[in-house]
Length: 348
Picture 1 (cartoon, helix red, strand yellow):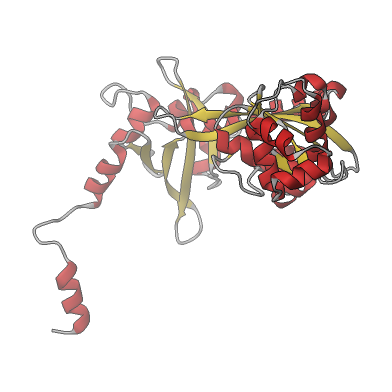
Picture 2 (picture 1 turned 30 degrees about the horizontal axis):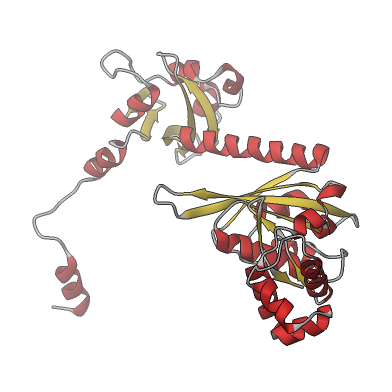
């Protein structure tokens, strides 16, 4: 036995034979596919059981008829479908996606693919085709298009941007934001903070990373450099969308123009500083790789005062606390809010 024959014998199933009719029946049993055939000389037309199901018709009551099929096509789409004369005499049969109204009044969206067969002298003699029910796909595509229009209108008229982010922060994975602003996905991350205060981009990254680690809703403010040359201050609120087991599926982001009172400098108020506790000071000192002596020297305080502040032994309105916070800010530390009330520590 030749090698190729041996290979065919080794993989051929035994006792298993499917005809093309059986395969067709198997495919059409899903209810989303149907086929048809049409011989022009006798005007004989054949519809498969799957096509009857798609059209919502009873094979025992309705004979296959191209004209009857056209009567079911939505009136607004009917002019796009070839007439009987165009198919039989001109041999014209294009691919179409159209709406069809079943006898029970339900609407389906169908995609038709067909071919006309010619005689030896080039005259149309027959046609055959396949019909796919793409209702779900088309409805999804239309819903997505409507959502894109809604987002575009929000951005153009109110400066509001909504988009989603993956569970873990990664550069360039913001296609919605890129589409709305005109920035490429790779440029979106670099555009935030560009042209703003020195070190703002690094702070923005620190805040996002801290917020993602927290797993809670959080807010960040930064400057977004747009392609038209404008630099706008945006306040971004990110909300985690969770699965049933509590894991984060994605982050929903809402960006809107930042009001003056929500600017980064608002964190420097005395009321805000009272929420900064000892562990915040220790974390800030760690980011700077400072010892307590280094922090004491930078804030013109004693070593023992620094220790008491880090142990929360001093009151929240203590002047020494404000001196330490001011020194840390001068060294590049920021205390952005997370989850509207919690305070994170970031280094610029």
